[in-house]
Length: 332
Image (tube, rainbow, N blue to C red; front, top):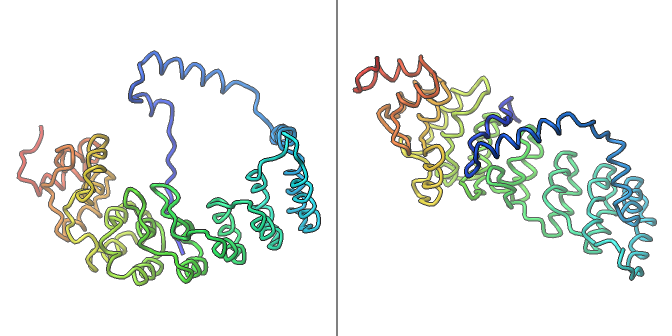
């Protein structure tokens, strides 16, 4: 179960005006080309489909049609013809993977199994699609044929368990089939890191229970909970602090990862939960963290005091609150 915690992030052209290594003239040229491209005629879906049909090997299209219709005999015939074909134009095996999602959409499990038996490889996109469709039989099939349920997808996506917290049944199914709440990405994100920002408190407690004591020590849970936008954000944050998440609330990110700490300090500066809350302008969160022992005198990885961070992000109410707590002289 999830709450409405997604915040989309879009990047405008002006946001990227400081791309490292780019000269101002490079950027102006890019803007000019982009603006010119924006004026071109839009490409229709029909045109895209026609182009794909022209560029896709016919045997791949035949398998897609068979997969959509659930016609196992035609699917078998496609592979039989493909094996006999010795021409240079013969489709490469991996192209047949485009049919996996079609078999999932139609519930045609036998065709998907036949494809796997003939060495067509599936990947995380197909596993993700099966989650979207609540296609448990396909998930079982993929797991039986070697899919790693704890494989991370990106630095910010720690695999299937963190993908869809709005489906309690799916979350429990994944847990019961070996998904670990403690799976960690390269930058230390775990499924619980995602959950504390957007899942229900019930789901968070379930994940913490399944993950055991180790869960409290990984994933920077308090840091991530600061960004929770659900109505119960203070309740969840208070709960996490009460059970000992991030025992040192004043510790900066990546203290145990010098490589990541150096990188983060070069970019925006490593922070602790209070720094994140200050930068977000969440005065009630700031007060809660201070009540739990967050030190308002701490500095981020670039050496900036919390008051400087509040001023930098133009949160006057937060700055005033911190100023009342601080020994630093007030700015004029």
